[in-house]
Length: 205
Image 1 (spheres, rainbow, N blue to C red):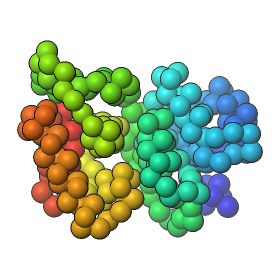
Image 2: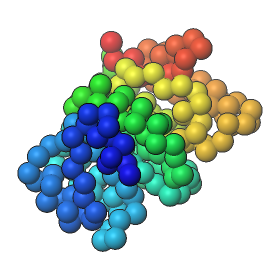
Image 3: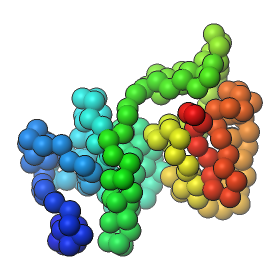
Image 4: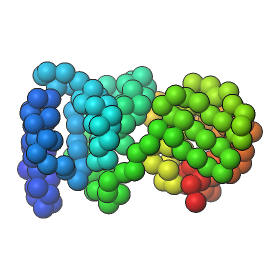
């Protein structure tokens, strides 16, 4: 059904039913966008996502998951996914997300990001400012990793709350404000940029 839906939008679709089939197809061609189900008959799509990133693959990856737990969302982001969608979902939304990822094209990857005098080592969870190591909490790293998955891209407050807290309540929103304030105090005001009425982005410009 999904394959036919994408083909109606003039996408060329290569369908794989298992991880083994996906690995074989990916060895033959590199897609513009990879839509990857987490639960496959012979393993986890998250593992394949992690493998591809270790190999240096820059293809945008969207994960489909039957679970809405924050833990699995964070696991997917840590594995290198660029977006995810929980089942059940509207096919129109999936197509829209794929179009957005396709417009971005191949994504530059790296485990380290330098902004002014701040260095963020996402792989080692190590932040330094100048020559001084800066202590960053686990939840602060979740925020930085999400923003760092697409430096310069604006992530809305709703997206951050959904992906990291799985909660849109005023309490979660206040927690986000508190953590953003702490991140700025630790790393300086130039690292995370606030776009009024839109959200936050890592300031790579």
